[in-house]
Length: 365
Image (cartoon, rainbow, N blue to C red; front, side, top):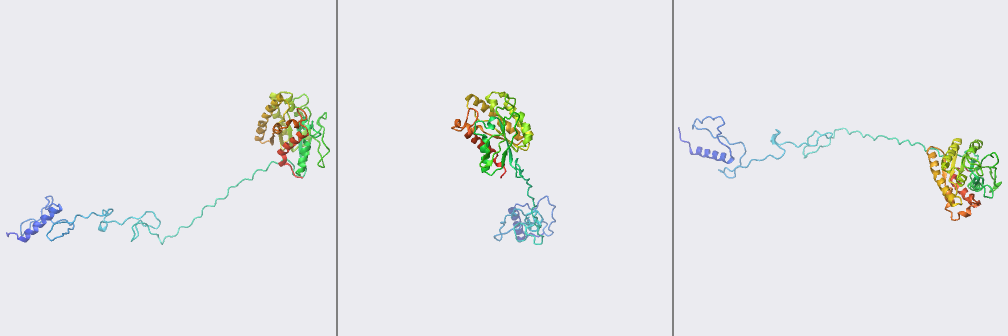
């Protein structure tokens, strides 16, 4: 056998140095033994890993450290150990891959059809029901609105020069070109006989009424208004009823505890007899006696609830505050003819208050 040459020895030493520098075990015993060099009888050196090595100096064993693949590359089996970044998914016309020459995102698909523009649904406007017709108790056939003045001696006009509040109420209606008349029938005994002037503002004055001197709501010694209502309404068919009653009940302390209930029954009687008419219910005027006036205020305080409950039930009933215009007047004594009845100035104030409650409902001449 020949002695190995110097060149062969140098190559062997260089190989061992490279193995040591790369941290690779040369000639791992776990590998199957390689065939001996027939010429030297030695095992050939295990070849170095395929990791490229760059030497900076001939004969130097300095190796470039392994190159770490960039994040996101490798492990997919793509050539070069890297993957093409995946673009957004689910866009119309996109294959899921980034277009060439870009770093991601889907390119518009020029060949895709433009989706049709769907107009918003046409929503019809809500159907608004017409407002209910305004309540109109008076005739629309050119005939006067029939007004029934209903009550006691104040409605009759005691203390005035004739006709009570009815005179100025008619005068105001004429001035506003409103067409009205007063209705009533003479009851037995004639206690509500027609009265007042023959003309007002050059026009014939309607002198009828349902004012009864001394009458109470019901059950009074002088007479009961409730006993007269049915016949009067049936005979005259009023469009508006102006009711003020209770002064004699309060002044005479006649069954006062039950006065509100008796008044409520009278309201029901009138609205049942004339369901299409307007019933205007007045709180009574003051009495020129402190003790009696305290009773007046207690009685008046019960009236709003009586009116409100019936209006809530669909009855054509309104409240008229006749007490306050008198009670707040600094010269209230100058409005009274006596402790119970107004004078002409007081009746004008009553007419003004009644008219304000009904003028919008009155037909034109």
